[in-house]
Image 1: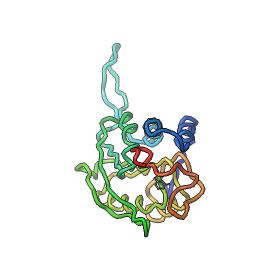
Image 2: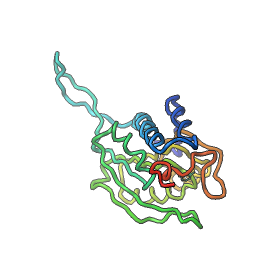
Image 3: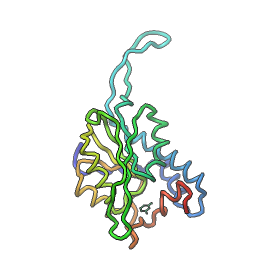
Image 4: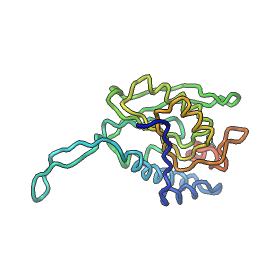
Length: 211
Ligand code: URA
């Protein structure tokens, strides 16, 4: 994987659904459903270069060798809590994947990430990790999550978000130039509270209806 890649997923279906999600009056159930659908569509792009292996199968007419991906080698790494909203759609596409969780909260004063939970499946060195968090804002949580994840030595790491701020991308790739970012949009900037603008607000609150 070459250095510091950012993959902008510009597919019209993804862009259309993202526009709907940005609307401030969208209901919690609609927001959540759209995130699930975008998750499915983004999984398609994120797994595009995943290795396949040939297995022997029987069609109704004859036997053949045909490619499959090693779903069980994939681990979705959910950054709690907003990352959980992304998971459902991704698992629709790769149902055999394993799931790890990283709990981080953002200190409201310093905007730095503080860890409170970390649980990964065994045998990480044999797995491809796909980190999920809808919002790449300051990048501090993303950097801290991938710092911790790298301690488990996964075979590869990809970072998937819905929206990214330029500041977050810069910060993330200053620390992890080897980890490609997949995002549906790069927004203008961060505001003084560390929110992405124009953005879509607080993703966790909008997924779980906590505001
Ligand atoms: N987290 C969010 O949920 N939204 C932002 O805009 C930034 C961080």
